[in-house]
Image (cartoon, rainbow, N blue to C red; front, side, top):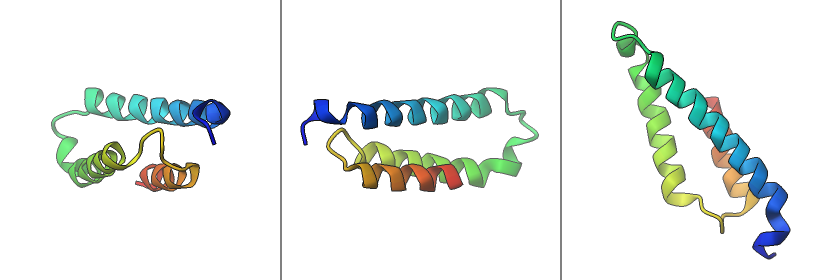
Length: 76
């Protein structure tokens, strides 16, 4: 399947990633120093999942691989 034939899937992926980035950045920007120790483990898990996504997912990834990675990330 050519890239241009999967434009709807790419638009959905971009929308989902923009949502994740917005939430992540909001948490990073608004967390108080006293709260950070309470969620450090969760933030590290999210960072690890994001790192894996940056290394594994690309435009050539199948929809299923990306969706499963995205669902795992959203469950964190």
